[in-house]
Length: 44
Image (cartoon, rainbow, N blue to C red; front, side, top):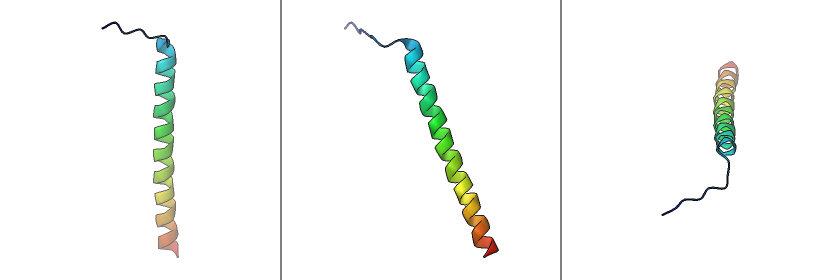
């Protein structure tokens, strides 16, 4: 079956890159929140 794609390849690559960057940013925020929470728990 013929697959017709009207979306440019660089647009798809840009979307994947943005999604990956967002995922790593969320992961970084979770790790920093866990470190901050553990620091506060130890200090209190």
